[in-house]
Amino acid sequence: MTKAAYPLKLPNSIKQAAQRLAKEDGVSLNQWISSAVSQKVGSIESAAEFFKRRAARAKGTGLMRFLVNAPDVVEEDWEREQQRNSRRKPS
Image (cartoon, rainbow, N blue to C red; front, side, top):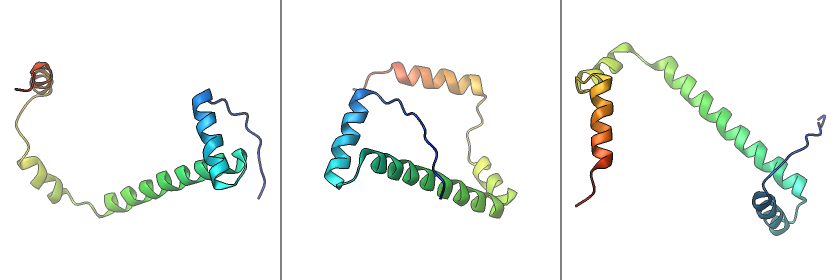
């Protein structure tokens, strides 16, 4: 495996938390950050593959069943209703 150096600028609070967690795990900060990035990449790539597989199986009939039950509202009316609801205070 080849390695590439990447200067990483983090907010102090994030760096301090990462240092604390690395120490708790008994690894270097570099190892901890590398592992965290690897986990994030893996989860995003897994999710992307999942959605690609789901999309490949999708049929137009399933979408039509969903759309038949959707309210018949134009976007401007929907946005106006959302604004009205956000201004209402809970009772």
